[in-house]
Length: 425
Ligand SMILES: [Zn+2]
Figure (tube, rainbow, N blue to C red):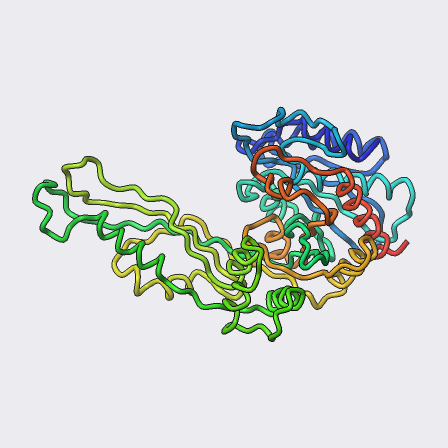
């Protein structure tokens, strides 16, 4: 079977989360792996919420191919049916092509190729999880809590790196080695209800909240250069002809030097705690002074920071505002000073020729966090052809998602080479 056919087939199995329904993808993969006699199993955290796990080979060493089988919902305005899986003009079209069914297909194809051609001297584990898109509770988190031995490996490769970029014409690829942690807060201010025609008592909860949010917007987070991010930014600076060694003090100078606005926004996000007040609710009627107001704030922290850090930093701003944690997940990091990281870098260069490979930290979150918390180093690979269409990159979680077949083959080629190198043919 062709790799693009596998991707097309699994795009046509709708596994939109919520509600999920990953069982369709798991059943499809089970049939495919059964044909090659690769031992596998479907693990349901609840009916229909299925993760699929397979293992090839035996031995002391182990490598995990990780991916997820669910996709985000679709909005209106697609120029083709989102679940068509149509193969046309060198692309596979549809929801999940990039996130993350392209990786599911590439990892599955690599497993099938290795099963036919190679006797591995170690264990190659394949896991396509449920529920990544809403936090992994019914997927990777469930597996980590109930069946850690089924997914434990010396290291894992997963989604999570930015797509490659060209900097001054030089192709640059990223390996994601860490993730920021969400520390989402709900804030509540209280006031006293009264008639809107006499607003002279300091009891308006919405006005109190406005002051808090204004102060949050003006808060300047401390800039932190973790060693991995420093390596990344120094490489970017050099490729852009920025003549200095980067440090916390001259980052803004570098950012104004960069022409790529979205790259500097991303670099800003991975060098500090970010705070984004995104929801506000307060008041019931134009002529009533509101007695309560609520706001939800998306805060993301860097490896090395924690919940206590957030509260300490924001205490002077929040004062007597009520604070509730909506979601917290600690940031995670895998070292770049490992054989696994070096092996991934070498394999990327082997596949792509002379490219710059840099470590990066994900501003969002993936299932890699559960692996790292189990002590399994996890690396996100954004393996794609260098000359990809920028519109394609922007289609993750957006409209008209698609992946080119050349990138799909590259991903799979990389995965086969990595397994052969590590699991010692
Ligand atoms: Zn994903």
